[in-house]
Image: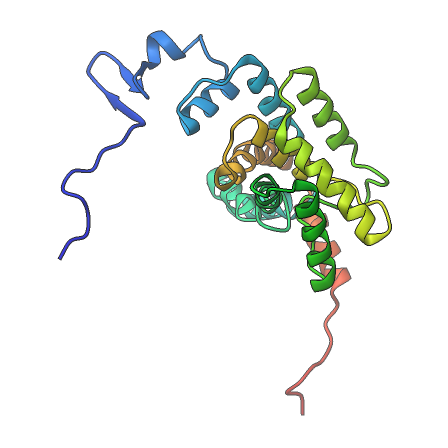
Length: 258
């Protein structure tokens, strides 16, 4: 027995011999040369063209996430490319597999906490409840803390400035700032809102749902990984990375020896 509906449809695209249509707009007449890439990706994903202010904030978020140095995603792309130079897409895909709950993709967890606060009758009390629960359970706080940027992550400061300048800053940014104050109170010290926390709030105020936010990280990180691969083509680092790993993790005879 099939549980699929008799007729399935898509709202995204169709085509004729003369044109391609994306969400009822002509690719050739309404989109090419009319929308920039940030506006187009927003339209493609969410089905509406963002306002100029929203596009500026989303663009700032994409710029923020594009490059993070030799983090797991960049290392994976460089190493895979060095092993299979004929398949750049494989190297980019390898790096994108590292966009997860610990690196790059942590805006999803932060967005969930923001939504929890926004759904509460008393948002300040809910923020304090979240902070206390995480401390008691010794759980990491998605969107908070950074090993290097202290006392504050400069990227978050700038993203909040851009959102305010564009008139986009609203309930989501207010919620994460309430949570930040509650965290500082609960932990007895200042813990910065990191870049992905700020991005979760900024994208939320642009109308981006929490469940698709990691997709925005994937899009911009793909561009950053292409940059790493291009550098690997002209200035290979794979051998140095390999040798550094070999030196950092020496062999030690373990269980099973005679």
